[in-house]
Length: 442
Image (cartoon, rainbow, N blue to C red; front, top):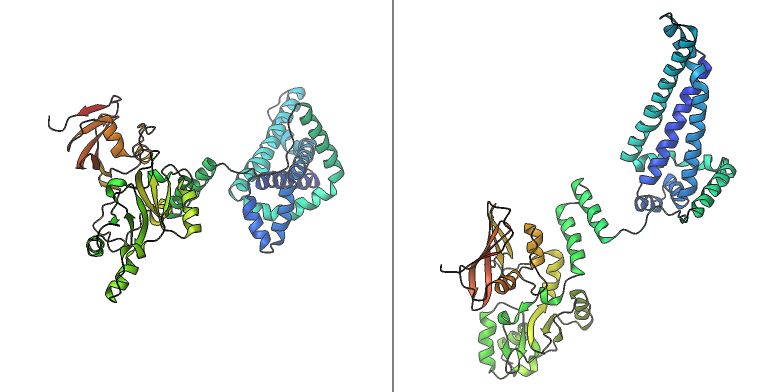
């Protein structure tokens, strides 16, 4: 065996591995991470930035390097291992033509095995798993190879571009396109699974995406639950309301809830009462925002911030009061439920009592119920699970239930015609597709 050829053969395997690792690492590496390292004056990262900004050209350089190394391996393979394989094959005493052919096949398979496994597959796997480290490591050598071989790369790359255009395709050097919302969600899920982010961070990001699609009516305090003070009542009567309820701001109604004229802050009222400077209710009234119930909450939040008003009244298409939204209601769509010392007795919107039983607040959105139980309840007419129950059972009563797709939805608390709480029980039968209605007192 020719030692010089063997050394040259090993070098060509190394060059193949280098260019394969370079190709996969620059394709796989995250540009945002490289930009971050470059901002911290990492010299190799700055070179990788240049590579990523001319990705098409540098991929052509890696392909050229792989091709040259492969041609060299093919040229050196037979003479390098011929002396080693021939005596072994000749030992079988076969005819010379058969011996020569068999020797060539063994050398060909051996060289191909080394090239594919050592030169390509192993470097590819390492480069994919350690793309950032490999990209930083190969940056300088790849950069200089590109500079040296630029005329040939320019010719080959230009020819490839021309061929691509002939078939009607566009050429694009950019590595990364903007990710869609769904792709970002998947990316964040993968980051959570790999431990890069925690569950709270993942939930915040998902809520941000959902926040953009929410309407004010989906998070409002419904009209029936609004606690008002009334302009025509005496200060003492309204003070009794303020003492009983544990809110900071109250809407002020002129006659009824369809005519809300402003809001009061109890801090101002109590401050004057405690200092014996109580004034008529009208002097405490501050402006309140009135908007249509279908306004997106992102627009409502911007308006609240701009006007520095923490409460908005939602009106329906007929001009009547539909509900009320506070800044806290909007923020809870991002950060989750916000509880203070007065909310200790407040039940969570979704309470998982056991593996088979979940208690839902009637105001939970149908969309959230569908996601929670993998159902397809219709939310085209109503928004909440309580509203959906009412739409399915006209004479709804305490204990009324509906069975759908392996789950039983049972009313456990009702206030007039408003469904307050629903118990969801997972049934054994998962194949049931038809909604079944069960009267309350059958």
